[in-house]
Length: 210
Image (cartoon, rainbow, N blue to C red; front, side, top):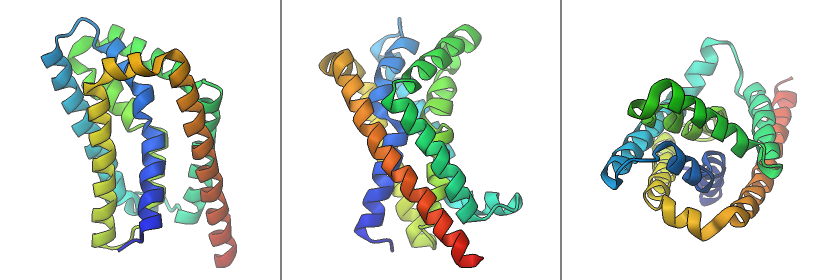
C-alpha cells in the first residue's frame, strides 16, 4: 500500500488538474435554462463518465504506454511538461478562457442533451492534464491494492467535483470573480511545483536506467 505522502500528493495533483471551483461557472453556463433536477442529472452523468475515463487510465495506463513503446520515465517528463503548461495557463488565467470557448462550441454543436459527456466529462473533467496526471501517478501505485487506492482517490476527487456542481450557484456567488482568480492562481503555482517534481523524477529514472 502507498504511504500517506503518496496518497496526499496524488489527491492534490488530481484535484488541482480537475479544478472543480474553476468548473463551477462553466457548469452554470452550459446548463443555463435547466431546472435544478435537470442540472442534478447532468452533474451525476458528467461525474460518472469522468470517473470511468480516469479510472481506466489509472488501471491500464502502464499497459497503454507499453503498446506504444513508451517508458514510464519518458512519460513522466512529457507529462510533467504538459502539467507545467496547464499550471502556466492557470497562473495567467488562460485556461479558464479556453474552457469557456470549449463550452460555447458544445452548446452550438450538441446542445444540452450531450453536455454531460461533452464538454463537462471530456475534456473539462477528464482532460489531457487529468489523464496525464493519472497515468503518471499509476506508475507509483503498483499492485492491486495500490491501484484500488488510486481509483479511490479519483472517486473522491470526482465526488467533490459533483458536490461543486450541485453547489455551483452558491460557490460562484461566494468566490466571485476576484476569489476565483486568486484561487486559480494559487492552485496553478502548486501544480507547477508538482509538474517540476514529475520532470525531475523522470529524468532521474532515465539516467539511472542509462
